[in-house]
Image (cartoon, rainbow, N blue to C red; front, side):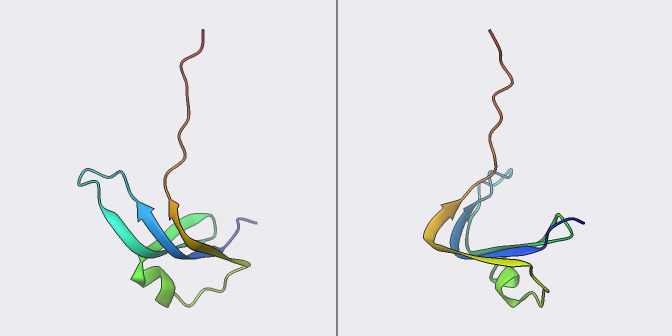
Length: 68
């Protein structure tokens, strides 16, 4: 079963086409991003886990695919 969780008290670096920086949180429901920013903090859940980022930064995972 995919996880459902909330990261709160965070700044999100989206790295989208506008390089938006979004305060608030990130809600994941059934393994998929459900909401970002303030909308994530209002999402009803339910969440299996709630993570306090303690004013930290959340950014997309980086994968290094170049191999020598």
